[in-house]
Length: 362
Image (cartoon, rainbow, N blue to C red; front, side, top):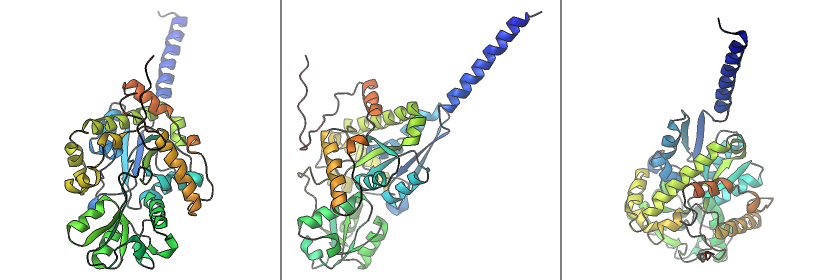
Protein backbone atom coordinates (compact mmCIF):
# COMPACT_ATOMS: atom_id res chain seq x y z
CA UNK A 1 0.00 0.00 0.00
CA UNK A 2 1.30 3.43 -0.92
CA UNK A 3 2.15 5.59 2.06
CA UNK A 4 -0.33 8.50 2.24
CA UNK A 5 2.46 11.08 2.52
CA UNK A 6 4.18 9.69 -0.57
CA UNK A 7 0.85 9.81 -2.41
CA UNK A 8 0.34 13.47 -1.41
CA UNK A 9 3.90 14.26 -2.46
CA UNK A 10 3.23 12.64 -5.84
CA UNK A 11 0.03 14.70 -6.25
CA UNK A 12 1.91 17.88 -5.37
CA UNK A 13 4.59 17.08 -7.96
CA UNK A 14 1.94 16.50 -10.61
CA UNK A 15 0.31 19.79 -9.62
CA UNK A 16 3.60 21.63 -10.03
CA UNK A 17 4.11 20.13 -13.48
CA UNK A 18 0.61 21.17 -14.56
CA UNK A 19 1.13 24.66 -13.14
CA UNK A 20 4.52 24.92 -14.85
CA UNK A 21 2.99 23.89 -18.19
CA UNK A 22 0.17 26.38 -17.77
CA UNK A 23 2.63 29.14 -16.95
CA UNK A 24 4.72 28.20 -19.97
CA UNK A 25 1.63 28.42 -22.18
CA UNK A 26 0.75 31.79 -20.67
CA UNK A 27 4.22 33.07 -21.59
CA UNK A 28 3.60 32.42 -25.28
CA UNK A 29 0.85 33.66 -27.58
CA UNK A 30 -1.13 31.38 -29.87
CA UNK A 31 -0.53 33.71 -32.81
CA UNK A 32 1.92 36.44 -33.81
CA UNK A 33 0.27 39.05 -36.03
CA UNK A 34 2.41 41.02 -38.47
CA UNK A 35 1.39 43.86 -40.77
CA UNK A 36 3.04 45.38 -43.82
CA UNK A 37 2.18 48.87 -45.11
CA UNK A 38 1.64 47.97 -48.73
CA UNK A 39 0.79 45.29 -51.24
CA UNK A 40 2.43 43.86 -54.31
CA UNK A 41 1.44 44.56 -57.90
CA UNK A 42 -2.18 43.60 -58.52
CA UNK A 43 -2.94 43.68 -54.80
CA UNK A 44 -0.96 40.48 -54.17
CA UNK A 45 -0.02 39.83 -50.51
CA UNK A 46 3.72 39.91 -51.24
CA UNK A 47 6.21 42.77 -51.23
CA UNK A 48 9.95 43.21 -51.63
CA UNK A 49 12.78 45.55 -50.79
CA UNK A 50 13.22 45.10 -47.04
CA UNK A 51 14.45 42.60 -44.48
CA UNK A 52 10.90 42.05 -43.22
CA UNK A 53 9.80 41.31 -46.79
CA UNK A 54 12.63 38.78 -47.04
CA UNK A 55 11.63 37.18 -43.73
CA UNK A 56 8.09 36.78 -45.12
CA UNK A 57 9.14 35.41 -48.51
CA UNK A 58 11.53 32.89 -46.95
CA UNK A 59 9.06 31.85 -44.25
CA UNK A 60 11.62 32.50 -41.51
CA UNK A 61 9.18 33.43 -38.76
CA UNK A 62 6.89 30.52 -39.55
CA UNK A 63 9.86 28.17 -39.32
CA UNK A 64 11.07 29.73 -36.06
CA UNK A 65 7.75 29.28 -34.26
CA UNK A 66 6.51 26.05 -35.86
CA UNK A 67 7.93 23.92 -33.06
CA UNK A 68 6.01 26.01 -30.50
CA UNK A 69 2.71 25.64 -32.32
CA UNK A 70 2.52 29.43 -32.64
CA UNK A 71 0.78 30.64 -35.79
CA UNK A 72 2.25 33.58 -37.74
CA UNK A 73 -0.20 35.72 -39.72
CA UNK A 74 0.49 38.54 -42.18
CA UNK A 75 -1.68 41.48 -43.23
CA UNK A 76 -0.63 43.38 -46.35
CA UNK A 77 -2.48 46.67 -46.45
CA UNK A 78 -3.22 48.73 -49.53
CA UNK A 79 -3.89 51.62 -47.15
CA UNK A 80 -0.19 51.50 -46.16
CA UNK A 81 1.05 53.27 -43.01
CA UNK A 82 -2.27 54.85 -41.96
CA UNK A 83 -3.94 51.43 -42.20
CA UNK A 84 -1.22 49.85 -40.05
CA UNK A 85 -1.77 52.55 -37.44
CA UNK A 86 -5.47 51.66 -37.44
CA UNK A 87 -4.55 48.07 -36.59
CA UNK A 88 -2.35 49.19 -33.71
CA UNK A 89 -5.09 51.50 -32.45
CA UNK A 90 -7.53 48.58 -32.35
CA UNK A 91 -5.09 46.04 -30.86
CA UNK A 92 -5.07 43.92 -34.04
CA UNK A 93 -1.33 43.74 -34.78
CA UNK A 94 1.79 42.83 -32.81
CA UNK A 95 4.66 43.82 -35.15
CA UNK A 96 5.11 45.66 -38.43
CA UNK A 97 7.41 47.49 -40.72
CA UNK A 98 6.29 51.12 -40.68
CA UNK A 99 7.60 54.18 -42.48
CA UNK A 100 9.07 57.08 -40.56
CA UNK A 101 6.15 59.52 -40.89
CA UNK A 102 3.23 57.16 -40.15
CA UNK A 103 5.05 55.67 -37.17
CA UNK A 104 5.84 59.18 -35.91
CA UNK A 105 2.21 60.24 -36.40
CA UNK A 106 1.01 57.16 -34.52
CA UNK A 107 3.40 57.54 -31.59
CA UNK A 108 2.77 61.28 -31.35
CA UNK A 109 -0.95 60.55 -31.29
CA UNK A 110 -0.62 58.14 -28.39
CA UNK A 111 -0.21 54.70 -29.98
CA UNK A 112 1.77 52.45 -27.64
CA UNK A 113 4.50 51.18 -29.96
CA UNK A 114 8.23 50.64 -29.65
CA UNK A 115 10.97 50.78 -32.28
CA UNK A 116 12.90 47.51 -32.23
CA UNK A 117 15.21 47.59 -35.28
CA UNK A 118 15.82 49.25 -38.62
CA UNK A 119 14.37 47.76 -41.79
CA UNK A 120 13.62 49.29 -45.19
CA UNK A 121 15.98 52.24 -44.72
CA UNK A 122 17.47 54.72 -47.22
CA UNK A 123 14.62 54.66 -49.76
CA UNK A 124 14.64 56.84 -52.88
CA UNK A 125 11.72 59.11 -53.78
CA UNK A 126 10.63 59.82 -57.35
CA UNK A 127 8.27 62.23 -59.07
CA UNK A 128 6.64 60.88 -62.23
CA UNK A 129 4.77 62.79 -64.93
CA UNK A 130 2.97 61.48 -68.06
CA UNK A 131 5.30 60.94 -71.00
CA UNK A 132 4.00 63.86 -73.04
CA UNK A 133 3.71 66.28 -70.14
CA UNK A 134 5.09 69.80 -70.60
CA UNK A 135 6.25 69.79 -66.95
CA UNK A 136 10.03 70.08 -66.90
CA UNK A 137 10.82 71.04 -63.29
CA UNK A 138 9.45 70.48 -59.82
CA UNK A 139 8.62 74.21 -59.84
CA UNK A 140 6.16 73.51 -62.66
CA UNK A 141 4.02 71.40 -60.31
CA UNK A 142 2.44 74.55 -58.89
CA UNK A 143 -1.32 74.33 -59.32
CA UNK A 144 -1.08 70.85 -60.87
CA UNK A 145 -3.00 67.72 -59.86
CA UNK A 146 -0.42 65.60 -58.06
CA UNK A 147 -0.99 62.17 -56.50
CA UNK A 148 0.41 62.04 -52.99
CA UNK A 149 -0.17 59.11 -50.63
CA UNK A 150 -0.87 61.11 -47.49
CA UNK A 151 0.09 59.78 -44.09
CA UNK A 152 2.92 57.68 -45.55
CA UNK A 153 6.60 58.50 -45.32
CA UNK A 154 6.48 59.83 -48.87
CA UNK A 155 4.33 62.77 -47.74
CA UNK A 156 7.04 64.15 -45.48
CA UNK A 157 9.69 63.71 -48.18
CA UNK A 158 7.36 65.33 -50.73
CA UNK A 159 7.04 68.39 -48.49
CA UNK A 160 10.81 68.60 -48.23
CA UNK A 161 11.30 68.28 -52.01
CA UNK A 162 8.65 70.91 -52.73
CA UNK A 163 10.26 73.23 -50.19
CA UNK A 164 13.60 72.77 -51.92
CA UNK A 165 12.01 74.22 -55.07
CA UNK A 166 10.20 77.05 -53.31
CA UNK A 167 6.81 75.34 -53.04
CA UNK A 168 4.53 74.09 -50.28
CA UNK A 169 2.07 71.20 -50.35
CA UNK A 170 -0.72 73.78 -50.51
CA UNK A 171 0.79 75.11 -53.78
CA UNK A 172 -0.07 71.87 -55.60
CA UNK A 173 -3.46 70.20 -55.95
CA UNK A 174 -2.48 67.22 -53.83
CA UNK A 175 -4.80 64.26 -54.33
CA UNK A 176 -4.59 61.47 -51.76
CA UNK A 177 -4.14 58.23 -53.73
CA UNK A 178 -2.67 54.84 -52.96
CA UNK A 179 -0.08 53.44 -55.34
CA UNK A 180 -2.40 51.34 -57.50
CA UNK A 181 -4.95 54.14 -57.88
CA UNK A 182 -2.28 56.70 -58.72
CA UNK A 183 -0.70 54.45 -61.35
CA UNK A 184 -4.07 53.96 -63.01
CA UNK A 185 -4.80 57.71 -62.86
CA UNK A 186 -1.42 58.46 -64.41
CA UNK A 187 -2.13 56.05 -67.27
CA UNK A 188 -5.53 57.64 -67.96
CA UNK A 189 -4.28 61.22 -67.65
CA UNK A 190 -6.42 62.01 -64.61
CA UNK A 191 -3.41 63.36 -62.70
CA UNK A 192 -0.51 65.47 -63.88
CA UNK A 193 2.20 64.06 -61.62
CA UNK A 194 2.76 61.60 -58.78
CA UNK A 195 5.22 61.16 -55.94
CA UNK A 196 6.20 57.50 -55.94
CA UNK A 197 8.74 54.73 -55.49
CA UNK A 198 10.09 51.67 -57.28
CA UNK A 199 6.74 50.27 -58.39
CA UNK A 200 6.06 53.36 -60.53
CA UNK A 201 9.06 52.60 -62.75
CA UNK A 202 6.85 50.12 -64.59
CA UNK A 203 4.83 53.06 -65.98
CA UNK A 204 7.99 54.46 -67.51
CA UNK A 205 8.87 51.05 -68.92
CA UNK A 206 5.43 50.93 -70.56
CA UNK A 207 5.97 54.37 -72.08
CA UNK A 208 3.25 55.94 -69.94
CA UNK A 209 5.41 58.13 -67.70
CA UNK A 210 8.85 59.61 -67.26
CA UNK A 211 10.87 60.43 -64.18
CA UNK A 212 10.79 64.16 -63.46
CA UNK A 213 12.81 63.94 -60.27
CA UNK A 214 14.67 61.36 -58.20
CA UNK A 215 16.14 62.09 -54.78
CA UNK A 216 19.92 62.24 -54.87
CA UNK A 217 21.48 58.93 -53.85
CA UNK A 218 24.51 60.85 -52.56
CA UNK A 219 22.39 63.06 -50.30
CA UNK A 220 22.22 60.90 -47.18
CA UNK A 221 19.88 63.40 -45.52
CA UNK A 222 17.13 62.99 -48.15
CA UNK A 223 16.16 59.35 -47.74
CA UNK A 224 12.91 57.90 -46.49
CA UNK A 225 13.26 55.33 -43.74
CA UNK A 226 11.23 52.60 -42.09
CA UNK A 227 11.68 50.69 -38.86
CA UNK A 228 10.47 47.47 -37.31
CA UNK A 229 8.08 48.33 -34.51
CA UNK A 230 6.05 46.36 -32.04
CA UNK A 231 3.05 46.73 -29.80
CA UNK A 232 4.16 47.76 -26.32
CA UNK A 233 1.55 45.44 -24.83
CA UNK A 234 2.89 42.41 -26.71
CA UNK A 235 6.50 43.28 -25.91
CA UNK A 236 5.79 43.57 -22.19
CA UNK A 237 3.70 40.40 -22.10
CA UNK A 238 6.01 38.22 -24.23
CA UNK A 239 9.61 39.47 -24.01
CA UNK A 240 11.16 36.11 -24.97
CA UNK A 241 8.94 35.81 -28.04
CA UNK A 242 9.79 39.40 -28.96
CA UNK A 243 13.49 38.57 -28.74
CA UNK A 244 13.04 35.63 -31.09
CA UNK A 245 11.06 37.73 -33.56
CA UNK A 246 13.81 40.36 -33.65
CA UNK A 247 16.47 37.67 -33.92
CA UNK A 248 14.69 36.23 -36.95
CA UNK A 249 14.60 39.68 -38.56
CA UNK A 250 18.34 39.97 -37.96
CA UNK A 251 18.85 36.62 -39.70
CA UNK A 252 16.91 37.94 -42.70
CA UNK A 253 19.15 41.02 -42.67
CA UNK A 254 22.23 38.81 -42.53
CA UNK A 255 21.04 36.78 -45.55
CA UNK A 256 20.41 39.95 -47.54
CA UNK A 257 23.76 41.43 -46.53
CA UNK A 258 25.55 38.27 -47.61
CA UNK A 259 24.28 38.97 -51.15
CA UNK A 260 26.06 42.35 -51.21
CA UNK A 261 28.64 41.36 -53.84
CA UNK A 262 25.92 39.86 -56.03
CA UNK A 263 22.43 41.14 -55.10
CA UNK A 264 20.70 39.08 -57.82
CA UNK A 265 19.27 36.45 -55.40
CA UNK A 266 17.63 39.18 -53.32
CA UNK A 267 16.21 41.00 -56.34
CA UNK A 268 14.95 37.72 -57.76
CA UNK A 269 13.26 36.79 -54.49
CA UNK A 270 11.52 40.18 -54.37
CA UNK A 271 10.14 39.85 -57.91
CA UNK A 272 7.37 37.72 -56.41
CA UNK A 273 5.89 41.09 -55.44
CA UNK A 274 5.29 41.83 -59.13
CA UNK A 275 8.01 44.49 -59.35
CA UNK A 276 10.56 43.48 -61.97
CA UNK A 277 14.14 42.42 -61.36
CA UNK A 278 15.31 45.32 -63.56
CA UNK A 279 13.38 47.87 -61.50
CA UNK A 280 14.81 46.61 -58.21
CA UNK A 281 18.28 46.65 -59.74
CA UNK A 282 17.83 50.21 -61.04
CA UNK A 283 16.42 51.51 -57.76
CA UNK A 284 18.76 49.75 -55.35
CA UNK A 285 21.80 48.82 -57.46
CA UNK A 286 23.57 52.07 -56.70
CA UNK A 287 23.62 51.21 -52.99
CA UNK A 288 25.38 48.59 -50.90
CA UNK A 289 22.79 45.94 -50.07
CA UNK A 290 24.57 45.36 -46.78
CA UNK A 291 24.16 49.02 -45.82
CA UNK A 292 20.49 48.96 -46.85
CA UNK A 293 19.94 45.78 -44.84
CA UNK A 294 21.50 46.95 -41.58
CA UNK A 295 19.16 46.53 -38.60
CA UNK A 296 21.25 48.88 -36.46
CA UNK A 297 19.67 51.82 -34.70
CA UNK A 298 22.83 53.90 -35.05
CA UNK A 299 23.56 57.61 -34.66
CA UNK A 300 22.55 58.23 -38.26
CA UNK A 301 19.10 56.69 -37.88
CA UNK A 302 18.50 58.36 -34.51
CA UNK A 303 19.45 61.74 -35.96
CA UNK A 304 17.31 61.16 -39.04
CA UNK A 305 14.23 60.27 -37.00
CA UNK A 306 14.66 63.19 -34.61
CA UNK A 307 14.97 65.50 -37.61
CA UNK A 308 11.86 63.99 -39.21
CA UNK A 309 9.92 64.39 -35.96
CA UNK A 310 10.75 68.12 -35.98
CA UNK A 311 9.95 68.39 -39.70
CA UNK A 312 6.61 66.64 -39.25
CA UNK A 313 5.74 69.27 -36.64
CA UNK A 314 6.95 72.11 -38.87
CA UNK A 315 4.87 70.92 -41.80
CA UNK A 316 1.81 70.56 -39.58
CA UNK A 317 1.66 66.76 -39.79
CA UNK A 318 1.84 66.20 -36.01
CA UNK A 319 1.05 68.36 -33.00
CA UNK A 320 3.41 67.02 -30.37
CA UNK A 321 7.10 66.22 -30.75
CA UNK A 322 9.12 63.71 -28.75
CA UNK A 323 12.62 62.26 -28.59
CA UNK A 324 13.28 59.23 -30.75
CA UNK A 325 15.60 57.84 -28.07
CA UNK A 326 12.64 57.57 -25.68
CA UNK A 327 10.70 55.53 -28.21
CA UNK A 328 13.38 52.92 -28.95
CA UNK A 329 13.58 49.57 -27.15
CA UNK A 330 17.12 48.44 -28.14
CA UNK A 331 17.77 45.50 -25.84
CA UNK A 332 16.13 42.87 -28.05
CA UNK A 333 18.29 43.84 -31.03
CA UNK A 334 21.39 43.93 -28.83
CA UNK A 335 20.62 40.46 -27.47
CA UNK A 336 20.03 39.08 -30.97
CA UNK A 337 23.28 40.51 -32.33
CA UNK A 338 25.17 39.04 -29.37
CA UNK A 339 23.61 35.58 -29.64
CA UNK A 340 24.35 35.48 -33.37
CA UNK A 341 27.86 36.90 -32.89
CA UNK A 342 27.04 39.77 -35.26
CA UNK A 343 27.92 42.74 -33.03
CA UNK A 344 30.55 43.92 -35.52
CA UNK A 345 29.04 42.60 -38.75
CA UNK A 346 27.29 45.84 -39.75
CA UNK A 347 29.10 49.17 -39.67
CA UNK A 348 27.26 51.82 -37.64
CA UNK A 349 26.91 55.21 -39.28
CA UNK A 350 27.52 58.59 -37.70
CA UNK A 351 24.94 61.38 -37.58
CA UNK A 352 26.27 62.89 -40.82
CA UNK A 353 25.69 59.62 -42.70
CA UNK A 354 29.32 58.53 -42.91
CA UNK A 355 30.60 55.17 -41.59
CA UNK A 356 31.97 55.28 -38.08
CA UNK A 357 35.55 54.16 -37.59
CA UNK A 358 35.94 50.89 -35.74
CA UNK A 359 36.76 51.23 -32.05
CA UNK A 360 40.36 50.11 -31.47
CA UNK A 361 40.58 46.92 -29.43
CA UNK A 362 42.49 47.21 -26.20
